[in-house]
Amino acid sequence: MTGQNSKRIGAISMVRNDEFFIPKWINYYSSQIGPENLFLILDGHDQPLPADHDRINVIRLPHQELGRVHGDRNRARLVSYFARALFRRYEIIIANDIDEFLVVDPDMHKTLAEYLQRPIRSASLSALGLDVGQHTELEAPVDPQRPFLEQRSYAHVSARYTKPVVAAAPLTWGSGFHRVKGRNFHIDPNLYLFHFGMVDYDISKDKLDNQSLHNAGWTGHLDRRYQLFELISKNKAIDGDEFFDKARRRQSLLRPLFALNKPGMLAEKPVIRIPDRFRSVV
Figure 1 (spheres, rainbow, N blue to C red):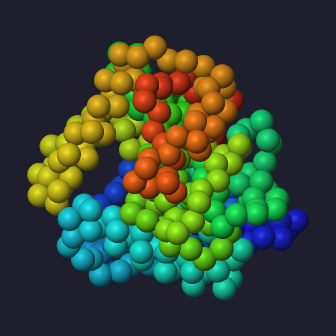
Figure 2 (figure 1 turned 180 degrees about the horizontal axis):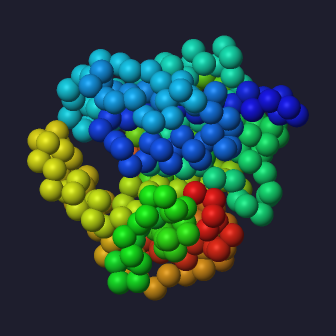
Figure 3 (figure 1 turned 180 degrees about the vertical axis):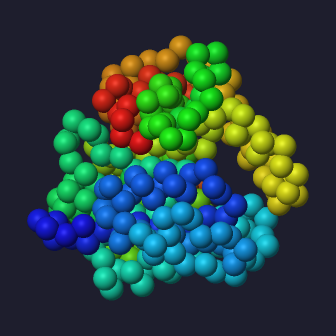
């Protein structure tokens, strides 16, 4: 975006075999930083161009068949190299998975482009991770044409998705963008990362039944992710605004000993009710 925003901000995602999240990713980040600043990497020449490909920058790369662990590492390394090159044209790079949406608290009344104009005194910023899932007893299947948060009211506050997705300098992301190699993390008080990978039970079940994903080593990951539906339906949700600051403090202080540059998981696996002000955002 141009105008009063002096810092140029770009966004990168890399994806394979997705038709559900790409349109939402393009529309959302276009509204926040401008479509000309979006870089979508399609993993494989067999991947069709998205409907709005002429609005953004699309790169198709040869697909390399890798298992889940090596594939995540390879993707993070490739995006890190590409982001490093983009810093010759941009001051800030946002990088995350296609089902993740970086949101400024609506109370700030600013777009991402406007909010990130402020001074950033660290190499990266993390956003509080909210893992959104369908409450299968209360919520209907998702309509992709409507805002997700208009249809989903519950999320697990998860350190797994409190990711350093905003880069203010060239850096190297670890697997899954969960950490920055050799650097600390800084959780911003007004940024949220909404993860929608399990936004719909039926869509998620189709993934669980996809044999090619199991062959690539996704079985354990999918089984763990599938537990979100039970977590949301069985636990009493707490008010998000009463918990967000506590979650940031605890994730910053209680870090895993094997990776001190990653936020710590919250043992009680808190489920929150998403505040109404977010309903029309994504």
